[in-house]
Length: 172
Length: 296
Image (cartoon, rainbow over all chains, first blue to last red; front, side, top):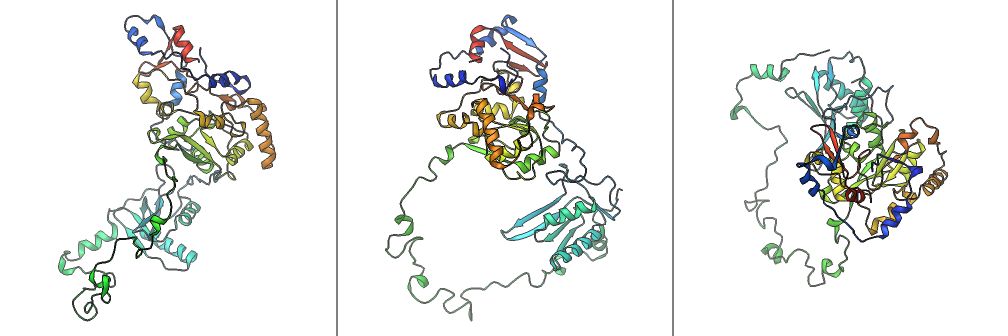
């Protein structure tokens, strides 16, 4: 009765097509009656530990897995952080899902800001570098806000893709 | 390198040296607060106070919203049509882009060396399925077909043609399978189901409306003829202009050709079995009638 898995070449679907035409539900036997007899005697049940490995595959992992090694960017565009942290006065850690912590925000329906989180070290040096980089990109001097308590940097406008690429290029 | 800084940084240094903040030495940034125009208080807030000249406008007696002076209003002139009728009872399929699938594989959240199932996608937190909200599973969408480069054996509930082409071009296999709501709930959250002690139910076959979808080889339906599926693979390769790789010569051919029985929910586990997670055992029935029921 065990049907672990079947291969395409061996599957006969004609039987199943025939069963599709049968709409009479012949027997609906409840397994509850069998459960009640379990307490009395284990005669009607087979126990096995061999197929338990299939159950272990179904259990969800409780921790975020470590990404496998890639040489440079992966096909989806994800780039691992560089082995050696860059020699800069600040550090931007990856999020727990191994992504660059740059996020866009939209308040009041039209107020666009970009948030850089998880900054460590000299946040004012980061602010200077970000302003310089965005000045080159857009030609505008964009307002920024540094929060030294939460160690975050907010920039006016949506620049998440640009800042992510820039940070990845630096090796964060 | 680890940076140790005093929390608050330069702002805290400044604050400690400035006088105490109070209402007397706080003021908003010039230009942020614009004075409100107070109506009915002289010069340009006064006279008619922004109400116009006589009539319903000034007297505050305008008719209800949508009234067009007696002409049949727009919202009554247009006839009714059931565009949204029964919208809350329609089947929904959560989209899964090839971009996202590639991202999950790259980050190691989904294992391409094992057949990819809805359980594997949910365990990797790739998709969120709510069986109680009329979700019937996941649909594979072709966005990201250009960058997709993984050889996988994936089982979804619906798939677009471009997505099937992209997966088969990389030497993978796609199957579309139907899960009734109860089986879907079991598939998405297997651990609470095993803990409940119920036997694994058998998967029901699709209803009349979906049978044609799942028996069609172009959709790689699980009820379709395998020979027709092979022909459809060749036809799709010709249509999209790629060489169909021969997976029978692949080292992972055994894994790629793994397919579930139409009545089976999990790989390796048959309907009717009870899983005991505390003792890591599986209990199987031996009664003839039960075996006949579960294998029908």
